[in-house]
Image (cartoon, rainbow, N blue to C red; front, side, top):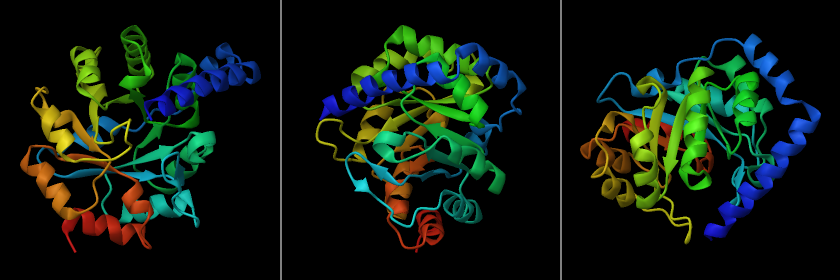
Length: 268
C-alpha cells in the first residue's frame, strides 16, 4: 500500500507542472506578495500549553475510505467546528484523490475566524505560493513524500511566506530524517505531526504516537493524527503529554459534526 503514496506524489508533480502552464511561477509570486497576512496557525494550536487543541478536518473522501460524507458542505462543517471548540481547521485540497478544492480555503476563512491548514501533497515550492494566494495559513509537509533537501527548501520558503508548517511523519526512519529540522529556520513556525496510519496496511493505531514520543524532545509541538475517535483516546494522549490532535474521518462520519467534536473534547 505504500505505493499508493508514490502514485499520488507522481501524479501531483504532473498536476503542478500543468498548473505552472496556466499560471507561471512569477505571476503567482506577485499575487502572493499582495495576499493578506496569514492567521497565526502555530499560536492557535500551541497556546495555551497543557490544554487540548483540536485541528478539525474538512474532508469529503479519501483513497482508503472512498466517499466519507455525501452531504458535504465545507462552510457549514467549518462553522460547526468553530462553534464547538476547534482551535483550527484542516482542509483537504487534493481534487483527484480526496475530492477537495483549493477554493474551499477562502470560503472557510470568510465564514470562520480560525486559521486554516492546507492539507495536500506538497512536493514543489510552487505549491507554497499557491497556498499563500489561496489564503492558507499553514501547509502540510509529509516527510515520506520528500527528500531531506526538498524538506529544508520548503521549510525556508514557508517561513518567508509566514506559513506555519505541519511536518508529518509515519515511521521511525522519517522521524529521524526530519527531527533535526523541526523548528528550522524559526521555532514558532513548525509543528511535528505523528500520523498513526500504517501506510502499508492503512490501519491506525494510537499507540504509534506513544512509541515515537520517546524520540521527540518538545512535546508542545506534537500533533497526533489519524485514529482518534473518542474522548478516551484524547485522554490517553493527554496523559502521555500530547495536547494537540488532528481529527477528520471520525468527525466527518457522524450525523452532526459539531456534536461529535464537542463529545470528543468534553466527553458524552
